[in-house]
Amino acid sequence: MDTVIELDDRRRVSLGKIGHHTRYVVHEEPDGTIIMEPAVVLTEAEARIMAMPELLAQIADNRAHPERRRARRSRPELEPETQANR
Image (cartoon, rainbow, N blue to C red):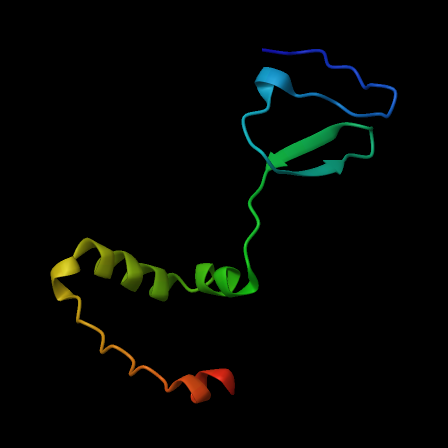
């Protein structure tokens, strides 16, 4: 379904009911067509993880089998003067 939208005096657009996402990457084609693609923002660390299919598969497998989890050791509490020096 096509929808006509108009720019306001400050050249802004309200997407109203057609805007289903909160963030978009926008680019303009040579003929003036504006393309809006839904986008998410990732940290560099998240992007590096997403680029490692083996790690993602391992994470998915571990999440599917929580019975394999190992308990973590708790960290010893620091003395009050040691905490102040951190």
